[in-house]
Image (cartoon, rainbow, N blue to C red):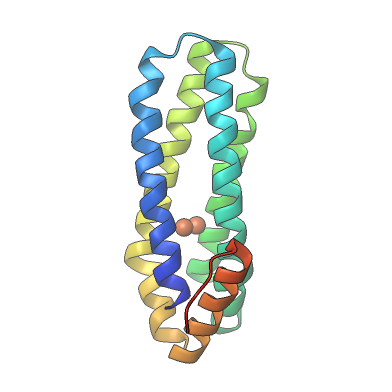
Length: 148
Ligand SMILES: [Fe+2]
Ligand SMILES: [Fe+2]
């Protein structure tokens, strides 16, 4: 199994989480409730982005000189985290809701670019052994047992 397979699997779980938050938000009536949803999403997205940065993107950097599509994806991670970081300080319910919905929109767009551009590029640039070794590192970091 390769690193890109595993990261795609994480995206699938996020899509379910995005759908769930989008369905619940219109009925959310308290600021702490929205902040709690934002906090859970922030923690999950931060750990996903960190694994991408440290495993896949670091492996791709030598091929792109730290610029190009990899730099764009790293910048988008920061943009998404920056939006989520504003939620705890929000003083109005509508403001917190719109920040959370905006984050989900940004994340969906970002994930689509990874799935359609970056991951296919990684599968071309990195050899099969590297992709599998990075997959094994992913499993170790996520504490998932891989049968050999
Ligand atoms: Fe990402
Ligand atoms: Fe991703």
